[in-house]
Image 1 (cartoon, helix red, strand yellow):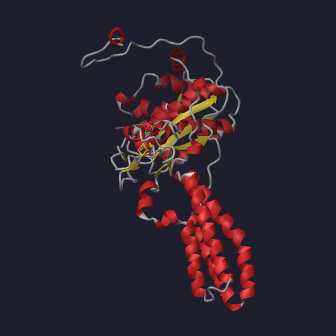
Image 2: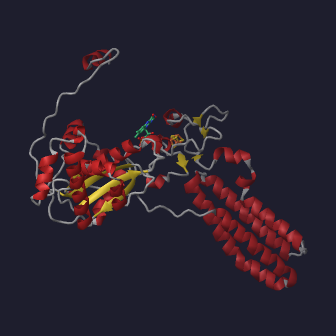
Length: 418
Ligand SMILES: Cc1cc2nc3c(=O)[nH]c(=O)nc-3n(C[C@H](O)[C@H](O)[C@H](O)COP(=O)(O)O)c2cc1C
Ligand code: SF4
């Protein structure tokens, strides 16, 4: 794949800060100024002169940071800031000209200055309707086409308000899946979601769309690789694979898949050995049903010095999830599938470590050796390494077994109607 890497966000995540802290800091500076002006008015004057750029810089920074995060229109922000600075200059003028000589008057005028600069906050509920903590609509960009409302899987976005703009159904912020569908489906870029920064949602590049034939070859050429080069896998590559895997769907978009990456060869060998021990136990004492026909050959190979369990893989990746992930096994399976599909693009191969999984499920002490958290009942290990074999054909599979219910429409029917 060439060009820009879509798994890497456009920019590093911006550090969040609360503008309220800055405002509290400014109020404290104001209190100091009031006290100073009260005691020595001449020093107070210079104090306020020095504070002017501090107040100016801080409030402008707070205001413009809110444009990105909350979808406030630039025109409205400029008006807010101009009025704020008018209020501030008026405050200083009132103080210097002697129109107001009492500190409480000064503090009152400072409050007015603050109030001018924060009209949006003071408008209270009306403002909150449009700028909820979660979803913000940029009214300059929104075309009221209701695409977001139709798309939201939880039906949280309402259009039936007098002004025709979309907004979040009141009290449903906790229900939101944080799936991001509302922001990525809007053709005008009018929505912003507090939990899903838009600058971390890259545009879809049309020139990188693959056609059906390419998709079929890509998916059919995925292989379980069981022969690995004697070469370690770079940490960056493993990290990149996990980054790709986190875009797999998860039930309720819970995203609770955790990862364990084992590169310690002694540990991988020990895990394979314990798996063989478990297989021996099954062969000797386990129930008949548990005796897989291929167990003897694998145990025999181990005794000959060959690891047919973890295949001397240089890396073992274990995806695991807590019990709170109700569809944890499905989420893990999907994440590992994404990882498996992406691996060949980096020269890497993978194989699901089903024998090890069987041993972990049967022997709790193996979970301890793996250091899997007790409260993570969902897990699956996967081998990873540089692939030795090269494949020249796509193997055939059994035909699918499908039960069709309801009327079926063929391609020719569709073209007749078109
Ligand atoms: C195991 C599993 C079960 C899911 N069940 C539902 C479902 O019942 N209804 C639904 O609308 N979406 C369901 N989803 C889809 C998820 O909500 C969706 O993957 C997630 O919100 C992320 O959105 P995306 O798939 O568009 O990236 C399910 C996904 C998984 C993996
Ligand atoms: S993030 Fe998903 S669930 Fe939340 S409002 Fe947007 S579309 Fe609806």
